[in-house]
Image (cartoon, rainbow, N blue to C red):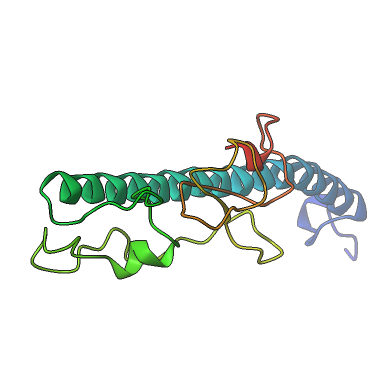
Length: 161
């Protein structure tokens, strides 16, 4: 009468616990690399969007400057390219010699480079710089690029985007 049946026992055996832990560790080993790739892909998407946004703002600034020149609101100097002198000019805006009755702003804020771990900021190129120059001529802002030394999932360096 003091015997218990095997079906009456409660709890788990050591073997069941080890099998469960093995299955969970295999699942974790599969999920973690996928999660890391997902985070990296999202940062790459954010970088592409930031580059596209700032480049579009630079182009819009140039178009507004050219329109002000065409409408005789601004007299162009020989050295004046029409591109903003700094990225801050895109945030501060300009009325372009009265072309607009207000300060036309092209960005609300300058987006951060999501791949910039060292806080270097954006790399800048002026109109007179080479297309792949990594030293800014400081005349104007014609283009921006990421200063990250990282390589994208597709194998291209972020600096070349």
